[in-house]
Image (cartoon, rainbow, N blue to C red; front, side, top):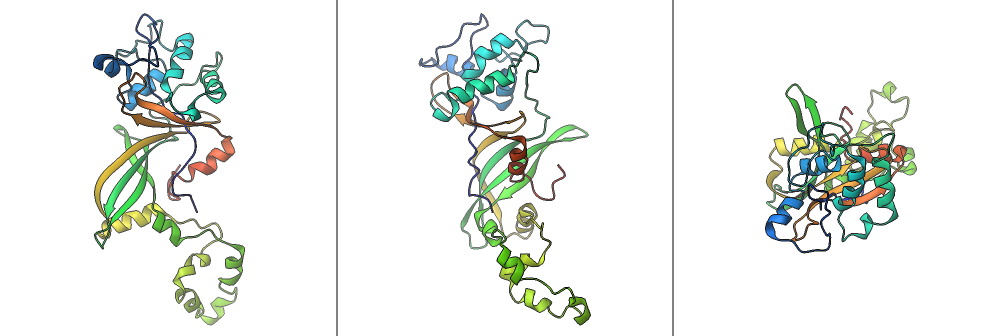
Length: 286
C-alpha cells in the first residue's frame, strides 16, 4: 500500500548564522569547537526560532522589540544556511523559490511548534515472539492538551503488516463478496470468507483502510512485540502551503551541522492531503 520509506524530498535546516553584528559565517570554512557549537542547530526548537528569526546565533531569544526579530532582510540572508549545503536536493532554484515564499513581504510564513502537520519519524527496533529484531517506523505529532501540548503516536509503518493488506483490486472486489440475499440463509456463506483469511479484508466496506496503529498497540499489549532501542529520528514539515521539507541531524565539524533541511519538495495541497494519510492512522481525529 505504501513504499518501505517515505521518500518525499525535503529540506534540512541547519544553521550557519551570522554574528550579532550581521557578519555571515563562511559556509565552507572549518571552525573551532566553540564556534561550531554556537553556530549549529543543537535542538529542533533552535532551528524553528532561527527559521523565524526569533533567536540570535548565540542561542539567546530575541525580544519582539528587537530590530532583528522577524526582520525580513536578515531572514533572507540566514535561511540559505539552514539547509544541508552538501545536498543537491536542497540547493538551486527550488530553494530560492521556497525562501521567497516564506519571506514574502505581505504574507511572511513562520513555523509554530503547536501548529499541526509536522511529524517526527522515529526508526526503532523491537523483538518479536521469535526473539528476532523487527524494525518499525513510528510517526509522532504534537497534540494540544490541558497542560499545553504533548507528543502522540499518530501511525506506524511495518513492512510485514503492510504486506498483509495488499492494494485492493477490481478482480478481488468481484470475486470476494457476500451475496445481497445472504441474510435469507442466516449468513451461512460467511464460511467462505472465514475459510480464506488471506482475503478477509475484501469483505469490508469499499473504503476500508487498515488501522496499523491499532495492530501495533495490540502486538505491544499481548507481548508479541517488545521495544529494544531507537535507531534514528528526523522530522517532516507540511505546515507551509504548497511545500514539504525534511529536517535531519548532521554531526560534523563545520558550521553546516546540527538540524538542517535535508529534503525539499513543492507539493500541491490536494496531493499533500493524500500524503498526510501516511502519517496518520485511519482512527486519528485530524
